[in-house]
Image (cartoon, rainbow, N blue to C red; front, side):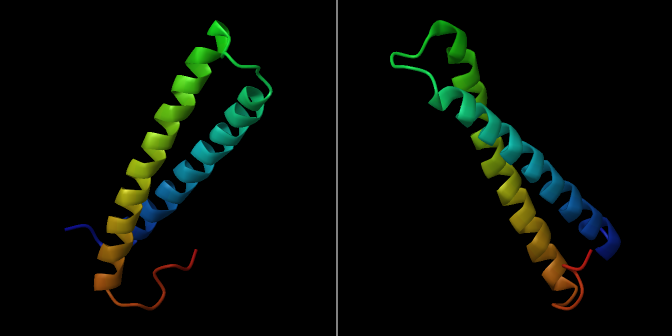
Length: 82
């Protein structure tokens, strides 16, 4: 079973990963919102990448939720402090 410290470190890593993914999604969305329909071939890969990132974000959120649940088992105080 992971230690309290391990869980806090993992939580911080997951939050950082989510932040990076969100920045990339925002960047791709800004680029793709300026394209006309139908989607030009060169942007198809970016659309696929953005969809993949959103699926990855959902997975990270599930892992983050499980990590926070495990942290709560140690008690409600202090686990969310950086």
